[in-house]
Length: 230
Ligand SMILES: N[C@@H](CCC(=O)N[C@@H](CS)C(=O)NCC(=O)O)C(=O)O
Image 1 (cartoon, helix red, strand yellow):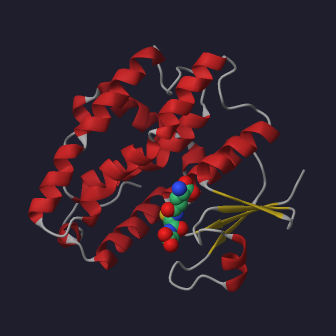
Image 2 (image 1 turned 30 degrees about the vertical axis):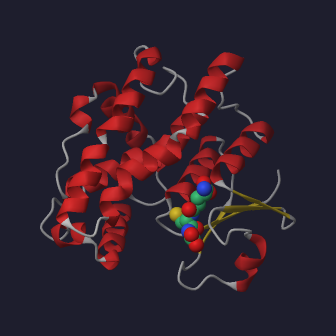
């Protein structure tokens, strides 16, 4: 088995996606967390966009972009997480391409500078939620995107469904309750061990600390908000 090093910022959702795929495949890897504000030279030398994740393989090759990393791992290490059927696989890839749009819609509230901007951003969240809810009609009884079998597309959405829950606990949004399939999918992904790089409560606390440090409008609600679940 090759030697894998995953270079990370602790709370990066795109790193989390790559880590999920490694864990789903039971691959041993070194998880190296670096400081976003003080990126070491060895990292700058192997990361073309200076971003995480980077997956370094056998101290020889460096892969970047979480989707490319996930696809590479799926092509090289069993079990295959993409569906066997080519049409189903294409549909999964299409919805995976939608992740950045979904991610931006869910997390924009964390970057809003005023109440007005926050409300505007919050109002946009149901748009991608409704689209995913419709896509999930094909999942049957679930609990995953394609039904019973966990797939690469699940790994791509898990970090952002988790962040919605974190943000909803800081200041109630109440959107996901209107999309029962999406809600159940998110719960199944959050319940899955592979989703977690850190103990849940510790990770949520880290996420909240980041929000506080960012000093945007939402930050004022952190101390009084519901305590993270164990
Ligand atoms: N499209 C990239 C996004 C990666 C990304 O945005 N990573 C963030 C951390 S979560 C980063 O490294 N930001 C540093 C920067 O923009 O300079 C992927 O999927 O890997």
